[in-house]
Structure formats: C-alpha cells, structure tokens
Amino acid sequence: MKPSELIIIVAVLALGVGLTARFVMSPAQPPLPFTEFSLPDTTDKPHNSSEWQGKIRIINFWATWCAPCRKEMPEFIALQEKYAAKNVQFIGIAVDDKTAVIDYLKTININYPILMGGDAAMIMARQLGNRIGALPYTVVVDTQGKIIHQQAGEFSTEPLVQVITPLL
Image 1 (cartoon, rainbow, N blue to C red):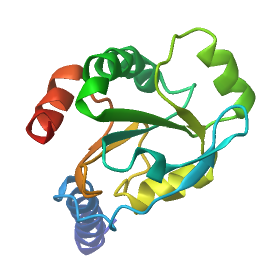
Image 2: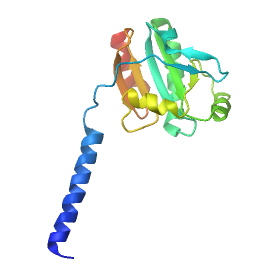
Image 3: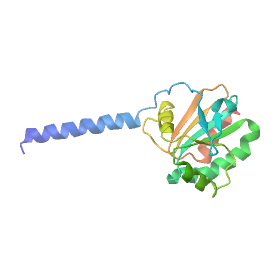
Image 4: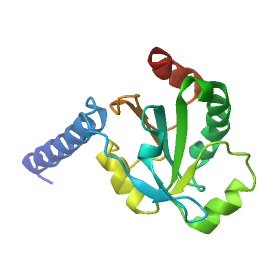
C-alpha cells in the first residue's frame, strides 16, 4: 500500500469518527414541542396524554427485554408513590410485544399507567428528542406542557429528583 493511500484511509476514518462523535456527544437539539398522544393500555383501553395535563409528566419508553429499563422501574414505582400527591405522574410506554408486557407486569406491582406503543413508540421517542434510538428513554414535561429534560439510558432516583424538585 502506498503512503498516499494510507493517508487517505486514515483521513476518511478520522472524518467518520469525528462526525460520529459530533452527533453523539453534541448538546441535544431542542426537541419538537411536546405533542399530545393517544395510546392503548394493556387492556386496549385508549388513553390520551391530556388525561395528565397540568401534572409533571415523566414519560418513560421501555421494553421487557431491556435490562436497564427493568432496573429503573422499581425506582419509578417508589417515586410515583412519593410524589403522586405533589402533581407528578409517571407514564410508561412499552416498545414491546403486548404479551411480553402483560407477562412482565405480573412480576412487578406497577402503580402508574403502562401504555402500548409498539414500534410507533420509537418514532414518538425520536420526535421527543431520542436521536440515537436508546432505551430506556425518559422525557420530563412540566405542568405547562414544556419538555424540560430528556434522558437517554437509565434514569436513577437522585438525578430524577434533582430534575423534578424545582418543578414541585
């Protein structure tokens, strides 16, 4: 291989790495404004996100096969219990097969609504700022319906409390 060919290959690789790093590590672009949605729960009863309008909404996209998703759910259950009286509402949107979700929910005492989003939920998550298609993905919406925080990956108790406390 000629030195000039090696230089071109290294330059192309460096450009690719640089563009990838810029996309992944750049500050999040502001998402589209929060748009109300309607999805069914596990019993096929439709729910519109406006049911929780005026509340601090923590909308979590998850799947049963996602270990970090399952890990954060008990924390969300505890936080829902602790903050329900303070106008906080968790909403889970499953990006999964309905049967798998129903089976999983039998193993955990969930205290917030779980809606079935299926594949369309990933499109919704992308519209809410999930540029990399990560699960879990959580969006915090204030009482006026403004998205104030997005979290790709696991969201543990302490950082989530830091986000919602100023809103209480």
